[in-house]
Image (cartoon, rainbow, N blue to C red; front, side, top):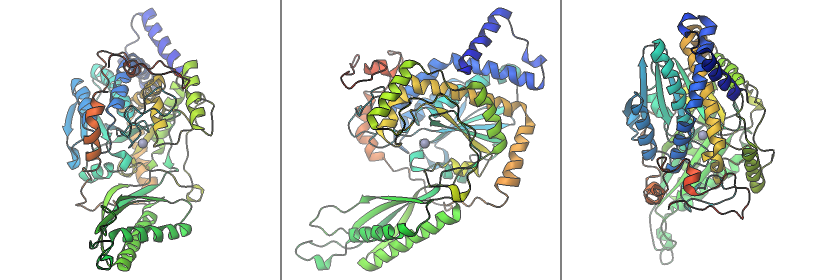
Length: 541
Ligand SMILES: [Zn+2]
């Protein structure tokens, strides 16, 4: 609420007074304050650009390591605005780093960009209604973070240019985050060498930040493949050695072990290859595991146990086993001084001013999916989140920003672009992500981020405090040990077939901002749709 009125007051003040006092003539806190007001107003003035970028990336709906259109679009936007782009970073075709400016501090702004399998969903429609049945979609909200970073960066860049402030802005995408399959490779490649502070952004339902070790887990994601011998399943089954039997026995072994694992762990698997047809004994079969725990030794322990299960299953079935890493993430640890500085900016910006339509729509979605809370969108700011003791943790998800957070002082800004109470990794999480809810959340987040960048640019002591915390607290007793070997390749082959299959259909639905004000308008969806009886009316196609 405060944010919009502040910006308006500031613009009003400009109109009334003609020109504000030149910021350079001021000093210290006043100067930072003036720049922050200016940056917030600049972000507000780019709300249309934010909406176009959020809706465009939503419509691309690309999965991990196949973010081809997304990368082309976002890097194009950055190049148009004077950034230098390096593509194909760390051996990953869709990865890039965009830089602008010169000298210190070097501030990295990152966010994830990829989607979720089978999460295709019409935005603004409060029930299951895929754009394309079976296609991927933004069933988490990763379409919004890099647009947020771009708007924040452009707002600060204007001030840096005019005031000739030294500093470098470095934007980068968390490609393949849904497989936690890129950031450890970035770190191994040295992408964050020379970076002073890293600000990460992630979609949420409130505007918030945390420091220390939070509720999430780290993980290693490993695919096990067994090889045996085919035979006719009816005529000579005794001559076959079934790789699928090995997969099933490994899973049985792991599911027995599950009872004896810590509460904090999470482990899950899918069978990625179960053979070809029943009358051929499967000679090859694969199962893909995620092993999640709260620290490196515990994750490594689970991984070792998984390897023993695979060995046991191979012994029982007379097959051979091998494995490969598909993804990995260190548990996250965020920087205290930067989080506190960011929280001050969060309090200043406040939550977006939700309309009655936004609230009615959010409640309709919550009711439809039977959400545990059905109170609509958050209207009260969350508190700064403090570290959790290991014994208080109860497991949870992961983000490979963890690897970055152990390389350079990092915080993650959470911004309110989605509806509370949704299941996550689900079509329902895509519903709000190209509606005014997502757009307003991105604008609020971009203001906080821009203000925090200004703090970092103007206060060398903040950067020093951040590094003091990093070296004397965070990494005092914990050394970052990557799960990756020096030659572990990034899994750039994943999802290729799925995207090849769906891209021609998805292309027909890409958002065209030159013809439609919003993606909702392009799809013929009148916001807010609250009832099942209302039907979208496609416009122009
Ligand atoms: Zn995410």
